[in-house]
Length: 342
Image (cartoon, rainbow, N blue to C red; front, side):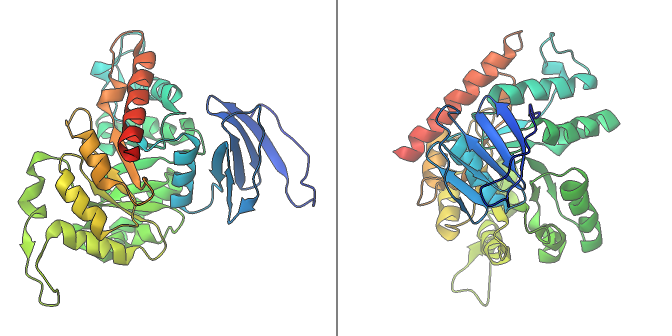
């Protein structure tokens, strides 16, 4: 969103400087210093008091951009009444002719999908692997995602990172400083020291792989561990969940659990009632949406980022691809809301 006006007015106490006004399909957005204030219905202009860096209102919720990731995520979920995370996995071969089919078309295609779904999504998730094959052009397109997504919506890079400490430090700097993403998926296989460089960014977040959605995930994740200091044996997945909770000292840890395994997702939710869970596997991977949402929501009917990528982006390969993407995203958002309300 580009500012359409610059304001020089102050708050009544002279302490808050208005920096800009932004208009988007989701409503009117005012930025005051580090805060953004959103109105889903610009005509109502209802404001609520600022509380702990957040503005909670009847017509929308906003939060400080520099605040904790979970606050920003909850704000976007409330503003758009959505638990839908839109995956941005570009495959130029599948792009409609009107966009083009080379790597140079990735930015335009992603931007079109973002514009079509920005008032329906709580988060966007580009997958690193879909950008790397195109070299510099792919990386430039990846960086453009954060620039093109409205500032109030978090962007989660799906890269499943994790390495020895010094290497993870480089990864963390790239993700959070150079590319300015809000969150990243990490692989816990190397242990806590491999993800500590990511945890050091307390205003960002990591999503730890616990139960992935692919068919072969059970090879290791279902293995039962014999723990001398544990009251009972546990699977690798549940050991990861237990450790992830202990790593959540700054409130910046989430989990990844696939919709393709709703029983395990329910077990994970029981063990981690307070952690946000990224749920891949809806759509092309044929996860059971209703079962996954029912299994994964927290006691407030939230706590999930239900991801769909190809089912939205490639809903049509014709000139109506934006309209088709919007229709698919709206349908998914509404289906998720029905499941969490039931």
